[in-house]
Image (cartoon, rainbow, N blue to C red; front, side):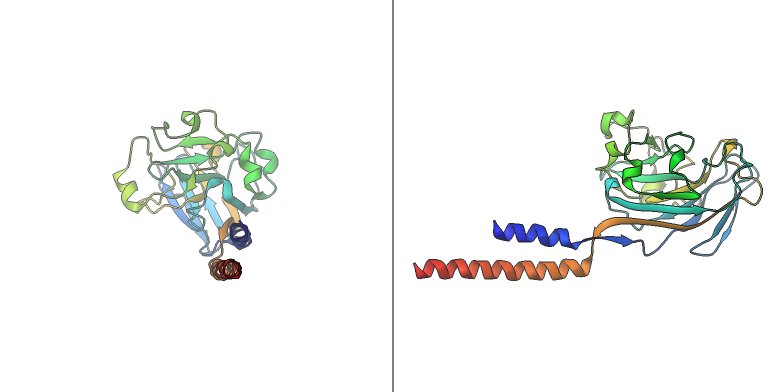
Length: 258
């Protein structure tokens, strides 16, 4: 019992919040009738994304927390600095979130609803979100016609309902083969099928995502999750082994003394 308690305590000690190391990648998802959206920016931002017509769609994606459960999102943030007042849908229409989720066999995209009034109070010159902010919000599921593997067959869900599913982008090969319901708007790079588990999305088929002017101006995208820190795990495991050996030696000595 003592050894088990030490093991639990050691593993809990090893849980830390780590910041994404590879960062976010800007990529084109879909062209409009007149071509691709205009994008520019440095590798780590700031970024300018001009959605000039419905149909154009751009992603800002990261695989840094792929493999984490949805419920283990620590923080998701992005700053938006453009003038949003001239947009048809107002200031809350973008960026919005897409997550690739899986049960280990099936994939789908779960998205927030940027026009949903419940999300709008979360916007403050961008977003600075924890999973607690998302948990009770409506979660719409896309990019898979089969929703039988999801809670309640994918109907009437919140992010909390999907919390046990894993954030994980499909591989290039899996997206190349495809499946029923996978569409052209799925968050994957046009022409390469490279995909990322966490995505900020700009544009869509609707005109209300057209940015106008210089476009969306965003910076400082970040994502964190509670993950084991490798060095801490090594130290903890060594300590647990030593504690176990010491405990067994004391037990044997006590038996021998009797």
